[in-house]
Each structure stands twice: as C-alpha cells, then as structure tokens.
Length: 267
Ligand SMILES: Nc1ncnc2c1ncn2[C@@H]1O[C@H](COP(=O)(O)OP(=O)(O)OP(=O)(O)O)[C@@H](O)[C@H]1O
Ligand SMILES: [Mg+2]
Image (cartoon, rainbow, N blue to C red; front, side):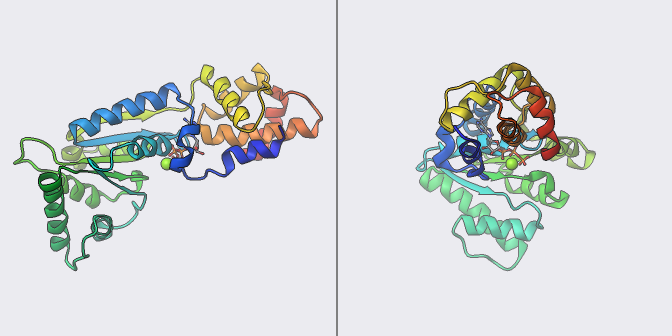
C-alpha cells in the first residue's frame, strides 16, 4: 500500500455517490440513523437529523433514501438551503417536473396539488430532503411547515427530512419555531465513530486501499480519536497526513508522534 492509494480511497469521494455506498462502514451511529429514517419514512412526517460537521449525516441519509423503491417514493434532495421561499418553491417545482409559476401562491398551490395527485393517483410518496438546513431562513421553515401540513387528512402525505449542523436543533427550540418543532416526529443527533469503531474504520479504509496490514499503532488510533472525535471527514485527512509523516520518517507503522506531527497539517 502506498499513501497515494489511501488518499484515493477517500479523496475521490467528496460527495457521497450511490456507487460508493457499499464501501461505507456500518458504524453503530449509521445503523441507528438508518433505523430512525426508516421509521420516519414509514410514518411520514417531519424528521430532523443533526450532527457535527463531517460526522457522516449526508452520507448515511443519502444511502438510506437511495435504497427506497423508486415506484413507491419520489425523493427530492436539495442542498440549496440559503435562498428565500420563492427559491425553495421553484426548486421543488423543478424537481416535481412542474412549470414554475410566477407568484408564491401559485407555486404553493401547484406543489400541494402535485403532492396530492402523487399520493392518490400513483401511491407515490414524496420524500423531501433538505441538506445544510442550518442555513434555512425562518420564513422558509414556516412555509415548509405549511406545505407539509395536511391536517384534514387521516394520514400524512409526505416526508420532510431536514439535515443540518447541531445549531439547527437549538434554533428550532426558539419560540418562533415552536409549531414546526412540535411537528417533528423523529430527531436524531449523529455522532462520529466511537473509539472502538475507529480501528475498524481505519482497517476498512486500508483494505480499500489495498492492504490488510494494521498500519496504525493503538496509540496512534487513540490520538486520532482524541483529535477528531471520530468524525470520518477529519479522520480521513488526519490519517492520510499521519501516513505521510510515517512514510517521510521511513517508519513501518504510524505512531502517536506521527499523528501529532500531522495535526499541524489538518488544523
Ligand atoms: N459510515 C461511513 N463509512 C465510511 N465513510 C464515511 C461514513 N460516513 C461518512 N463517511 C465519509 O466521511 C466524509 C464526511 O461525510 P458527510 O459529508 O456525510 O458528513 P456530514 O456530516 O454531512 O458533513 P457536513 O456537516 O459538512 O455536511 C465523507 O467523505 C464520507 O464518505
Ligand atoms: Mg453534509
């Protein structure tokens, strides 16, 4: 194994793609999150997934929704969360294959009508996923609540999943968002890899890069966990730089000292 093949094993994956889902580690957190999402999709309603940056929220959620039956679910994934209500409605209309109307009221009506048609005529359930939802403006959150509210129905017609950083959870606790917050039926805070999972994760990445050798000493793994709290994105870069430091020193194994040297490169 060389350091370049390790780098290739994660660098080529800046955004999770379906072809790479089978290469992901089934960590306890990812398994728990997947179970919560299945529950949300079954019940239909609003779900909230938060977590620290790089903890694997997007990857796990995308993997779950990519596994949904295309004949039963219409997944609309949008990472564009910085716009206003019109931007959101236009993007939803586009994804639903609707003409983009001019007024906000017409857009709202068109989306609601299409969701009703999908549910009644085709039995297809829409699943709207908004990533980076910590950026959503307050008025957009309020409109999302109205859009997903089918109070006259005996059952919910669609799922809305918000994925965002930890601050989103705090924001939704504010009085102004109480109505939205009350309608959240699944909440999950995703954390990085546990200490004992990190060795498995590194072994998994090394195997993908072509080696079965345990190149990281236990103390190095401990140091990586302390520095990253197990968030896969920072684990990947710190492990990569630590392998570089070990290679430069002609060492066979990565030690805690190599990790300390590498920390300067990633922080
Ligand atoms: N279970 C896993 N197995 C292997 N790699 C993973 C796993 N979970 C996440 N990763 C990797 O970690 C990196 C970060 O993941 P991701 O982008 O999903 O994090 P995030 O929590 O959505 O980050 P952000 O807060 O920046 O949106 C990606 O390169 C992804 O491939
Ligand atoms: Mg993300």
